[in-house]
Length: 301
Image (cartoon, rainbow, N blue to C red; front, top):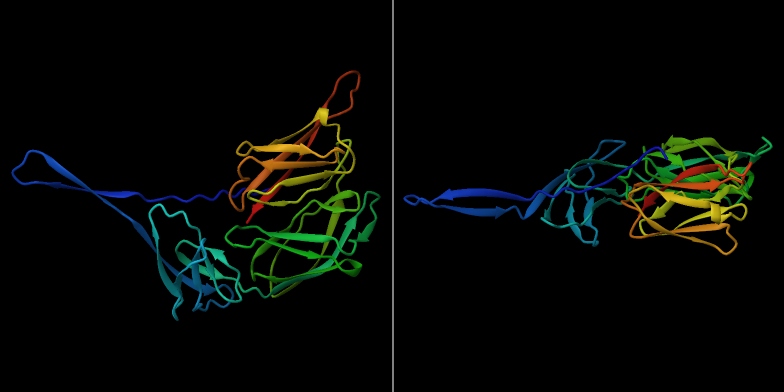
């Protein structure tokens, strides 16, 4: 809800050279296209600083275009007009996007565990029920995989495993517990072994109903499904998407589920899509006042 990532690629186009013919008044112009760009990378371990040999660069078609040698370097080319996305992969490390330069890769050997609790609407502290799904997300989009999930066990215990070392995470909210929605503000940096207690808090909605189901993340062409704790008076309710995207809304027959289908896509991977849900309150002295809630969904691969 706080960060907006917008990724773009810029293509370098052409170089012009002019030649003059001796003894002639006219000038012949010849254009030479730069048909490819060359990228050199250096790959190191982000914890030890050691170079990584055998790391491979792959394009979005799955083809290997380069492999780092014993010095941790590799060179590959990209043809002009080529819109392929390149990733850097190494055994035991988190894959990342690359386009030349020095890269520090993170080993997938970190864990984060602890106890998950929630404070209900009566301000009682409880362990999050067994089977509840918890989701964490990376702050930055350079990693190919940026969402991790786990389920709560007995007594609120949870554990995330195989996290990229040194990466910064935050817990995605709201989370549904029973028929109510709970929010959390919690972030951490993944060490080899990290523990902590996380607490969710009851969302006291101003609307005559509460949003109890929100994905937090969505694929580029996936549907955003929002669930409510009771039927919505759709005659006096509407959803607004940030201006760069459009979608088709569809209500379920019981008016408790709203599905938003993107007209094209929700944007680039890592981008944040903001959604405002507006409800006009029951009339007071013949006047309806509008109240709204806003939330965001992060686009993932």
